[in-house]
Image (tube, rainbow, N blue to C red; front, side):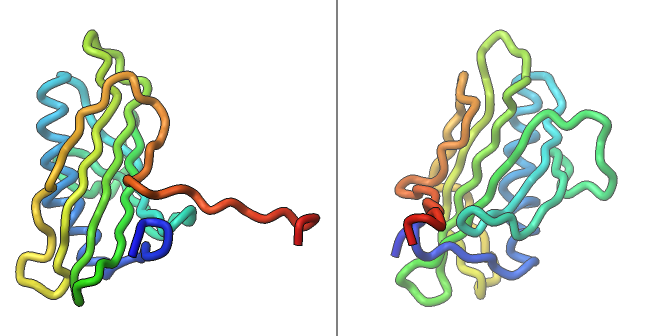
Length: 152
């Protein structure tokens, strides 16, 4: 099992809980640190395809789009060997955030148990990013290369 083969889109409730229980609290913490708004477009990817989108900020999923979005967030889920278990990876980039520190986003990864009472577990790791303005992806994930028609 790997990020290259086993990505999937979990139930909508799982995605929303990840946003409210993991992403929004991180946005709140970072917004306080950098003293800037942290609203962002959030997209759940399965490989290179967007399967769910919303706008988030420290309060959670927003109904209306704020005038100023400052970042983008990508989320990926993948299955594991254990039945009813999985992993998630969140990556946030704020390329235009003008801070003295060079802060440009964060990433985090953790486990989930979709059938449990508490399906989303707190991140096992959170990495603050400085001067990183491109997507890194989860460890071991490489985008699939599209075969050109001439090579088929």
